[in-house]
Structure formats: structure tokens, C-alpha cells
Image 1 (cartoon, rainbow, N blue to C red):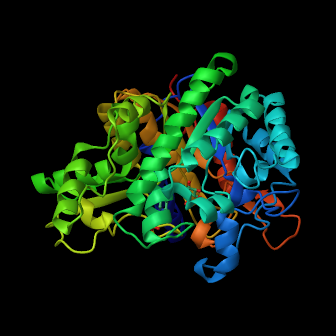
Image 2 (tube, helix red, strand yellow; image 1 turned 30 degrees about the vertical axis):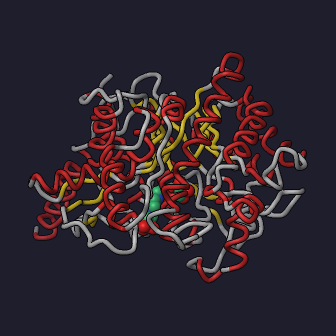
Length: 500
Ligand code: GBH
């Protein structure tokens, strides 16, 4: 009798628990032309770092010269060995049933010195040609990033990377070559992955290669200026020389957390908005509206003057440049993983410049948010809805593609928390689509498989498939989240049954 009572109580509790976890999930069907995909990036998966004529890139250089800067002293020398295993990866893509695969081209794999007048590396070209052909044969669209952080090392050493305007033409020539070679099989081009990270971490905080930290508050803005011009130039090349025949779309991918005000206080609202402008707006504003956000122009200008600079540390665009950059997007690519709270703080004293001081805001996490294996990634599913609505309202209701979203753990095959992350974030995306009428047309899970997670090495895993990095064959194993994502892709529905 007692035992029965215990069992029935457990059952009721279990039921309540499932109702609570599942009932909040949106049961509407994704729009018929909504697309789903998965993503990877060249340095994180390819390996074969010096094979078949590939040139060295800034991540090869960094991981080889300062291995201790990587959490587990690892590198991408072999990574998932995707250079030799695309057929295996293709099987995974087919098993998942994705509409598209987002991947990046390793610039020095096709141009070892980075320059078009150096040698074109035929083996590298053949590698990507094979990938795009097979994707096409299997009805999987290609979303191709030209720059996911693996700059040819000579361009860093000889030019100073993204600090030197000379690179605009060097990059544009690389972009043209890629359109020319592969454009008939590529549906979406991405000029840059996360310029915020390229510049803020690459040229100020040191959190990414080339990890140059010598001129905070200056170099990152120069970098962004050069990257924006490079982006615009590549966009115009595609637009005028290739769009008519290749009929693809081209844009940039911007990363951002959702920045939620810490309270309803006017000042916190202002600080949160300022933080959004200094991160997403830094790039989105020039591309959509033509120039940097006014709040950046004003604050960096004022502080620069007080610091004794004769002009703003934020470079100025000429009016021709503004016209040139404005409108260089066919959609906006958004990498979104997490949310932060933002609290207003007093402006920093004038002293050594830094971008953190320019923004002036306290950015932190709520202790109650679910954690992950990465300190920057807290599970806050409603953030994606607020973010996409804010983008709609501030950037002329653009087509939005979620180009990355995903959860990091330590790699168990049974990964209910990843399934839950996808379910909850996608549920909020459905609300954005149907209730806020945000024009989100596609969603990309990061990542197809576990891979080299930059400074975290192989310690943080974000894959749907697990990769055994101690086996030379690098076998892939589906995690339990594969089953869920696959079902979502089949049914276009997040729960057992959706309303049509
Ligand atoms: C993406 O960036 C990358 O595009 C992808 O290559 C990567 O594998 C994926 O994230 C997962 O990390 O704590 O100050 O160092 C996501 C945006 C922004 C997330 C910077 C990590 C670290 C902030 N990234 N953030 S910090």
C-alpha cells in the first residue's frame, strides 16, 4: 500500500515536471520556407595545417609559438581532420537532414601567402570544389564564410593584418577569386565572421589571434574600420560582377549577446542600449544606416579630446565611404548564444584609453541562469526573442539568419541540456517570428561536431556529434541531441505534435 502511494506520488511529480518543462514550448510549425542548418569553421575542424601546399595562418602561428595560451595547450593541426573526412561529414549532414551547411574557406589553403599574385594552391581549390559539388549533388545549400579568423600569417607579419588599409584590396582579390571559383555552387556568402571578436579580442583584449594588446582603445577601432571597408568592397564585387549569374546572397555575420537592463531605471536602460550600440551597432549601423552609432562617435570623440588626441580614436568615414558601406547586406547574420545584464556606472576617469572605458557599463550575469562549460555562455532562451525584435526595430526590419546558436558542455554522448537549449531557444524564435513578426528565415546550430574551441582548446564541446580526438581516425558519434535536432528538421516542430 505504502509502496503504491510512493509510486503514484513519483508519477504525479514526474508528470508535473514534464508539463512544466515541455508546456512552455511553442507548438506552432516553422514557416514552410524556413531553413535549418549546422555550422563549422575551417581552422576548428579541417586540420591538415601544412598539407598539400596550405600556408600558415595566425592560429597555426599562435598555437605553435605560444601553446600555453591555449587551455589544454592544443591546436588545430589535426582537429577533426575534416580535410580528409569530408565524405564522413557529408554523411552526418545527410543523416541530420539539414537544408544547408555553413562552413568557412581557409584563405591560406587556397592562397598560401594571402596574395592573389602568389601561387594559387590547386589542391586547396580542389578540396573546396569537392565539398561544394557534393553538397549540391545532395541538395544541401552552402553558406560560406570567407573569413572565420584564419588570416594568412604573411599578411599579419608583413602588413600588420587588419590594421593596414592595404589589406582591403588583398582581401577583395581573395573574395573575387572565391566567387569566381565556387560561386556557382554557393547560395550564401558571408564576408566576415564576427568582426567584433576579430577586432576587440584580436587587437585589444588578446582573447583571439593575433592577440595584439598594445594600443587599447585605438587598434580595435582601426581594425573595424578596415574590416568594414573590406566587407563593403567584397559585397560590391559580388553585387556587380557575380550576383546576376550566380544569384546568391551576401552579407556579414555579427555576434552579440542580448544586453538586458539590470533594472527599469532610466540609467540602466540607457547603459544597456549603449552597450548594444558599442557591440552590434558598431558594425550594423554602418552597414544598414551608413555610419557608426552616434553614441560611439560622441563618446569616443569626447574622451579622445580629453585624453589629448588631436582627433577621435574612432576613425571617420568620408561621405563617399558612408554611401559605399550603406546597404551592403542582403540579410543580417547573427551569432547569438547568451544574455548579459547591464548596469549604469559613472564614466571612467580620463587616463589610458580602452574600449571598455568608452562604453562605460557594468556587464554581468544573473547567478540564477543555467551555466555551461564556457563561462561566457549562460542559458537565457528569451534573449534571442528580445534581440531579434530589437534588430527588427532598429535596422529596418531586415531578413535575419541565425548563423550560430548552441550550447557548450564537457562532451557526454547523452546531452539532454543541449537538446533543452535548442528546444528553448527555437521556441523563443518561433515567438519572434509569429508574435513579433521578425523576419527570421533560417537557423544554424553551432556546431556539427565537437572541434577546436579557440583558447578553450578541446575542453569545451559544442557539437551535435562527438569526435574522439585521441583516435587517429577521429570517429564521429551522434549525441542524443542529434535525435532531437533531426526530428525538428523533419517535422519543423519542437514538440510531439504541432498545430499547422
Ligand atoms: C562563436 O563566437 C564563433 O564564431 C565560433 O567559432 C565558436 O566556436 C563559437 O562561438 C563558440 O564559442 O569571455 O570575454 O572571452 C561566439 C561569440 C564571443 C563567444 C566572445 C565567446 C568570449 C567572451 N563569442 N565570447 S570572453
